[in-house]
Image (cartoon, rainbow, N blue to C red; front, side, top):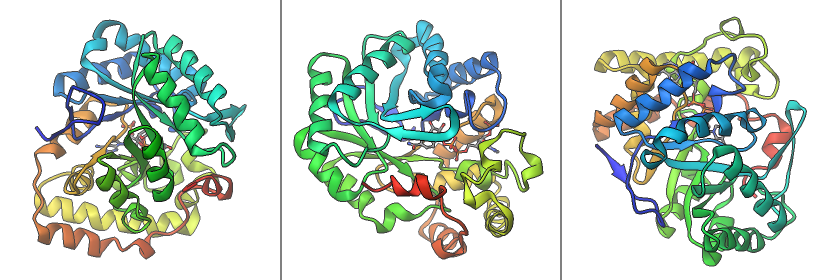
Length: 330
Ligand SMILES: NC(=O)c1ccc[n+]([C@@H]2O[C@H](COP(=O)([O-])OP(=O)(O)OC[C@H]3O[C@@H](n4cnc5c(N)ncnc54)[C@H](OP(=O)(O)O)[C@@H]3O)[C@@H](O)[C@H]2O)c1
């Protein structure tokens, strides 16, 4: 099993984690009993880094993970996030990363999760007002108080990462990274993570399902699925058609190798030093399928062929609509 030990944590984790977000919101309906089985299945497979956030399902996702932790707290490396404040609509939000807000949010997460300590506590986005040094100071205080073990950041710039790390160790940067989102290779963040010894946690490693063939058209998605809405330009109209064509190329390459598209997309991320993908799923058979990516070794020629098939400029549409893009890379 490929593993990685995050700075500040003593227990190594598998190089692939479990994204829990879709178990409570954004990607259509879910079933808590089934999601709890997925969490139990993950632990059985050694997939022990669980990823949630206070804003997923407006707290319900943390409560659901907390329900599982009642029985298996010892088995899980628990990661959650704060900083994004929901304003009723699924896509309407504001950001607060002031020290007082971070400390209050952490107490609220500990309560919902029903745990005494969070293993990895991320700032989900930065508010663009609070200096990163002040926000990291709050995380250092939380660590001193025994409420968190390690700190992480999500979607920040390489220079912010370095400034943050000078105040308190940054154990992980969580940003979008997949065959259809290659920004970390050019914006300096992958390099900065390697320099400071932080893991690069790749979120939406399956391109929110597109790369795994989870959908090809809006008709494949339930009403209310955020991927059907303007919030995700990549999944609208002509952009979707162009991006599905890319996913088809990956699917063909996967079939040629006798693996599934999801496994190939994950194996590609696993071929990158220090990268830990956290695919999300509500289905036990997909969890098992995804975990088998840990066993796939790609050759340099395989990696080159995959990257040649998906040049960044072939991907159509931005990752988020304007408001979401504006708060990245602070
Ligand atoms: N830091 C951030 O700002 C941020 C943003 C987004 C996400 N995240 C984290 O990253 C995690 C993963 O990202 P994500 O859920 O957005 O995207 P993802 O992992 O790229 O894709 C999830 C989607 O793919 C489907 N899927 C999973 N495995 C599959 C397989 N083997 N075959 C076919 N379809 C498959 C899932 O459907 P089913 O559920 O039906 O299987 C779901 O619709 C989230 O759970 C969350 O914890 C963080």
